[in-house]
Length: 313
Image (tube, rainbow, N blue to C red; front, side, top):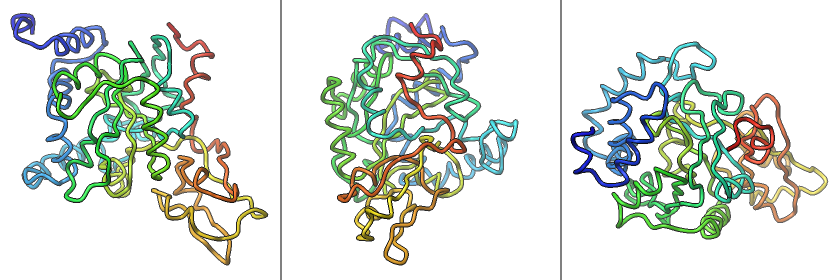
């Protein structure tokens, strides 16, 4: 890499330099991280089956996934590495998503095993968190009839934001934290779910907030098909039966199909509910709320984590 450094773009050199500081991050990981970031639209199009090459790659991917865990569950429960361990998202309600894009200092929250229930890619390290790039959603751009708008993915912190801006200038633009909040709020109004994404090749840490719809999102697609790429927020929705009139308006916004109207009242499938809070903000009668559910894990709440002195810098 050193021999080529003079020919590499500044953001590529910055990514490689940061990679050297990550324990256990191999040359293969570096190549994977570069390839994923540099060709993210191609990468996701193949992964979601929308690119014609997916027909050729799919058998190999199936073998790799099978080798790492045929039941597709996280190694946190099986003891062996699974596909979802390497690339996954944590559901975060709107309030917490806005806090992730308004952190005003660098932080290093190390290994969040108690929050991110996967064996890999579970560090929340933010360097220059006010550096945010707004990227066209690779999942949406891969679809024939995508949801709009396309530019809804937030790449947060360095070296990730600069890499995307430098390598995808026509599909990315730099935005302020205030503008990022507006993106989050607009997507929430559209009924889309906020996920904090982690990836092993992306230095094993958090790098993006994606605003996802079930019809376009590759991770939600994989999750529905048995690969648990998404972790619950740690909350579930609850119905106030005195307020609920059974109008069913909220069911149209549930991306996880956890809501249904039964006998004139809203019914919540607690197992299907991921605690995103979208239904809460779309209930005109304030009949829904999020409540903590211990069995669904610990929330990714940045202020709580920072105040608990887990390596704040």
